[in-house]
Length: 416
Image (cartoon, rainbow, N blue to C red):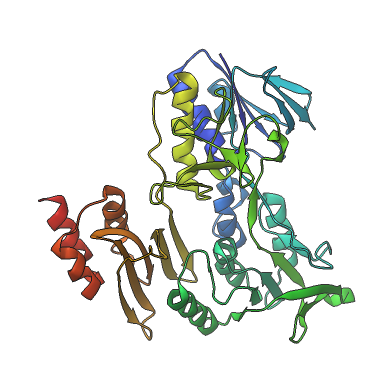
């Protein structure tokens, strides 16, 4: 059996390891298009802040790890998949094609390039690859003015590392609050105040009109209806898009990603998808969407690998959307349907001076979503209540009145 895995990130590596555990004799190849050993993008902020070296981003530390397990790692780019011939057309590597019996697409996502004049300037970078990280580290000096475009999840992940690296940081976010796709208005505004107290300038509801060359001093970031901001380095973190364009015509795509069923199989039963490139089932809504977080990617990978080895062996119930973000020491989180549902109730508590906030969302007497800030003790309980779809009964009203009774509610409904 020939298993080909496109993508050398966490999903690709976990899938390869799972397949090897299931079949000692199968041919397993990981194809990645970066000139690096398989690594985790989630480790890049730790590299930028100096907490780890480059080797610390590598998913497996021993140089002979993959070869020792009979897993071939190929450096090449997938250009096209011929599903009928079961062949991947490649570029940039020694071989021009890779034939497969089962194919896993785990190519992740790629950063979006906003349509801003000057975004291609040499002083502008994304923060997505190790090569990007090297460029950023070379461009940051202690006290150097740096502009970060975008205060979404990705932007806030790297925010802390930029501050730790000594940048004098300005954040420009088009939305009316920080992390608008994860945090509600109250939570996002509190996070902004926290960042400003830590010396970060945050401009929300602002738009970059252009980036202009300023000679040796760097660039000038022109703000629509606002003053220009000088910067030695600009980092663009305006979102990502599934890296699935090369699959056009081979499998069904939805929202630019591979539509994957409960086996993580695509519309072609021999092609599977995992991670940021997969449009998989959302546990909370029952709909299909991209859930771009590493735990979901790893879960996808294990399930897909089992089904590549034995069709229908494991089913995917759907991922619970869950994001936990550490922003200069303040933890924020979102779970499930954090915006709430039509006709649903909610309960919230706010301690603005202490940067503590919790908002629970209910559908009838079930917990379906939440936002928290500055509170970490209930992370597992919230997920457990949502994933277990427990009927809260009288505890629903108690949580509306006091959301901090989560542990008591969990014990009551799970031990009934």
